[in-house]
Length: 451
Image (cartoon, one colour):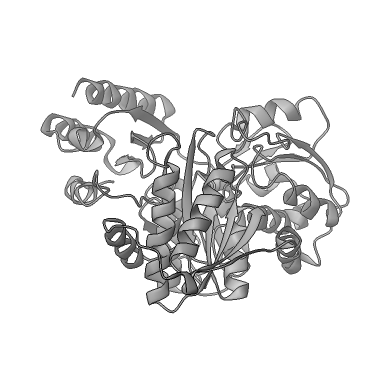
């Protein structure tokens, strides 16, 4: 069960109105927060700090948003003005940039707002290990952003080049761990969210033998995540009903989140995928989930003597705990899945291939692979509010939370948290009875809206 005091402490130290970095880089509306002048200033600030760290070159990839052209140029100008060389990768999934950063021993950036619609955009940062920037480094960049932008002397300006084979390199990287995976008998429908996986994902699965059809794989700059992708699984489920498919796989806009749909129309989230992948964990390696991980999965791990730890919500926090515990597998219900034995960060294509490799001995039957796992019903409500902190600090709100926790006892959980990327407060209640969790969550949401 959640504890009120730690939650308050966490939220007080969350994003202030003056801070740019959230749980997954920097993100916001293109017309306000993420404007070209700010992005140029950000490139200069990040470049200046990285130069202090001895870094002289940065890789820049992007998803398919129309604003990516603008921000690619703005970031390029900012970094060059700080004396940094730039390598442009073009459209590439976020984990592809992570891989290239790691394999080239260079810092990487991705221009993406992940699962948000095209009106938003953002920047994700990866270090030379292909992992998210540390909070310490983010804070140093934040401080630098408060300074006036002053370019280096002309003789010290950076230069720009382009890596023409970035997608091909990433495709080969994805296939490398799966030389024994034969998908030739599978009919798979891929939902590419009109995003960064639109080109590479079909090639990866086709080259491994699968019979592939795609939907939402024709990006036009504004249709990314629009009623498709991992945040809208009903679209893929509906498309699957029109054909004969063994499964469907949905990615998000930048290719670091995944949901899977079985031939019978069942939607698998990150918890289902973690259950499957945990079947092949090596000895002494546990699993990292988050505060959102279903209680049933935690109980499964306990019953099977698999160590389990909950991190804060956000894939970078999952990764931090994996590194800390020296474990290999972690993820979130939203579909961020991290397999450190195959990739340095969360990678939706890698996760999909690991999933298929894990169920191949069951004849690729999803239903048979999940027959021993039943999740507790969860009700999640995302409330769009002006000030999440005002609600979180309200005494009447927490009196209600405490009342619900007491009612649920050991057979449920309550979780309250603000979004790290949007003006939302997320309310989640979990219990063994779906009607109970739904009613309690609705009553809590009604109270929150009155505050």
